Length: 335
Image (cartoon, rainbow, N blue to C red; front, side, top):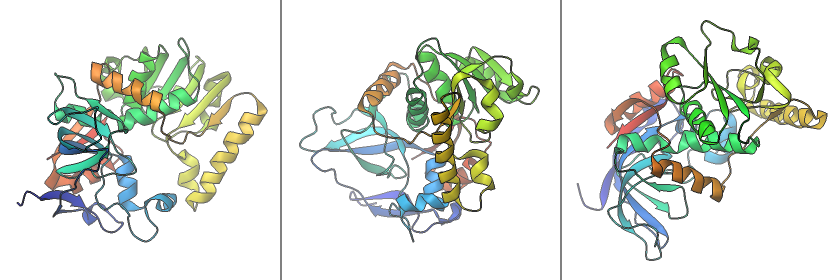
């Protein structure tokens, strides 16, 4: 292969996992404030699945109406800094780093570029690339929901779906913030979730978690399979319910836009009532949160859960598995 070329997973149209093909493409060149990363590991996550398939419908407003704007996906990476732009001072060639690149994408390739202002962390000495790659996407969303809901030390949170990328991150981040955590998962993964630091683990296969006698400051649905109506009784008088997607409303709606509007109206209505309420959290760039998360990653305090590892050549199979809804933690791709 030429030194100016690289392998990448390319999808030029929306569709099932089979639309993703391994191709040889031009290697990117870093601009003044960018790093060139030699990618050793990346992930396939729900964001990648949505941008590849163009579903739900609303995502095309961001990803491209008729065809994808980004043909090389991938929001997380771990690798080595191969080159830096002339104005980059925070990182050096040869450093091992991991990070998050939603919006620009590009980590499903042997090389990628990333602005030096983005979420980039140095990989702890005892962490492999495969262990470091899934450090940012799930934790980014989980931290956003925990912070936007105003949780403070000593508050109580219930995490429903504690074995997914976001849920497993939410358990660990909530504990790092001094929260009391109850986590909900299936029978086979109770020990795993206890190991993440949860104070109490509820097995949803033997116990209806919505009948819990305890009350929470926050109920965080990390898998979008519950609802405010179902979980309302779990909340304290000023408690908050939030989730990672539109949940049951979206799955029952004929179109995603009415569901989206309905979800926002529900959040507004419950807020105006002043009691228990639902909150819809849109991800946004928060420099302080980035610093906090970067510190947790670099210190080794946050350890993402890895389910399966696939080589780049099997990325279509990785997509298929990620979309089963059965993955535990993260699906990693190696170069």
